[in-house]
Length: 388
Image (cartoon, rainbow, N blue to C red; front, side, top):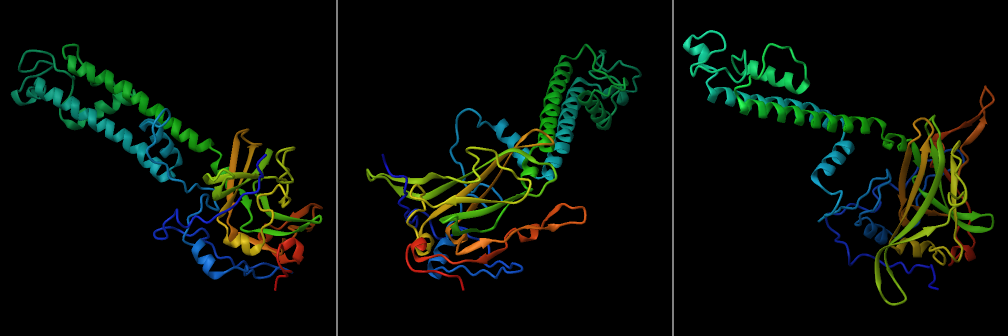
């Protein structure tokens, strides 16, 4: 069986240096409190600048940086794409499309009715001095009680919104007006159903709930229970809880060469985590430190700090669960680059003393607070390392 250890190579020949955002757009320095320190990760500056020319796959806020092109097949039509775009768009754009769609259709059908009435001669009644419903061609008008474009616009609005004041109506002698009336009634129903679906989806979607899930800006590597481990922290800052939360981490190497010599781009390898979402649900009543033990089965096994800074990979973390208030599934994502993995540090405790009501207090300002610890030469894979 092929070993799970990845041969992580550089992607410099595959991605252009110009016009790309950095793999790490955040400042690696972090101000912390109490025994914590100002972090300046040890790394080769040339390597850091090279990593800055690459674009990360998933942003720290969980947004994907992957661009899809030449998409065909089911589920890729214009209607589906427009619905998804409106759901993902900001509320100001959704509101603008909502109002504009009604005004555009009202005006468009008002113009059609005006043309039908004009060519039918309905406006000749006023010009010729005729009274009543009889026009110059001695036939009934297409639309009764229509005098100008304003009255036709109001008539178009009444049709689509089914207000029905009862003052204007389409007569039986004008087939074009009858066909236009039926088309507007059907199209108006479709537009209303579409826009109501968009607004309802935006109101109940769990994207905003996922924003309450916080990931630490950095991950750290240190000894945990006698084993060199990669650790990051996660916290739920919302009052409603996540039920059945499960977390997984995937190491995505930019390139990996198989034993057969085949080059795999964006190769994915899972990282075993504990507390693990594989065997049990994750309890998020308080901030939790997630641990990945760097054993022989880990893709990170055998790498020291210098090797990791030269490597080209990204660790993508995904949390999935069900919100207790709406019973809907939610997902939160984040990622860590090699320059965001700090060697020889450990997270500070966020659980403080009990408050006046006897409850433990969580200080979320310490989410990224860390302090230095030592790593032995055997654990580091090269020479003994101790943070300054």
